Length: 291
Image 1 (cartoon, rainbow, N blue to C red):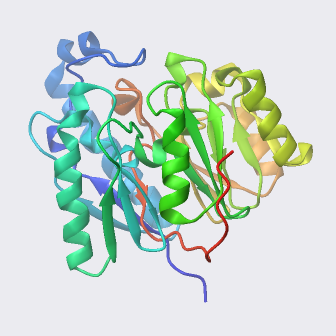
Image 2: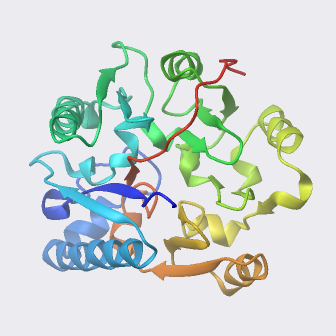
């Protein structure tokens, strides 16, 4: 019997856009109507939670914290596999206060039996969680982004911790600052990705490891809407509102798109994948070979 996907989300009560640490962030747009933006964020959050539930996921929501608006993006908090959580290290000072909060949250999940081991990367080993280390269940390895927020050496550290292969991919654009903004392995084995976000070497790595007929190239418009930042749950992809072309391409491959208006969170540079952390990924032990 298939295991029910389990996702962590963070209540958006403390979410706002009050600083800019990536090119998407629009504190001016938020401050122009802070109360209206907060209401819209709550509505978008609940719509996303409903979409994930419709797709068969169990969603666990925990509180955020004042002064840490980006806690609402728990994908960046850590990497979880086989019930083990590895808490990341944030590059920007604005987010470093999240680290002890997430460490405590993961330990609480451990106490309630959701996890069985919690550790943290050493100081200075910048690695921003599943946002830059995406588990590919069909292939049995991690894809790890580096060059913007996470460092190259973190891929090796993650691989050693979990005993899994890690394929490191260098990111070239501050706009696509995490791997999850431009790369999405989906359940059938395809990979939705945005080629301009990667170095030529990283593109060669992707194309060598993923057959051409399983690669789906996102357009500039798809990427500009943060549609690649999607949650894959069986044959459903939950994502920010896609252009009709992308919906059609995915539909032709047998996927249903559940589109959610995530505009308030896109003002901060995040969408569906950023707003969730998968807690239930399971894999058998394997040899390690960080690429």
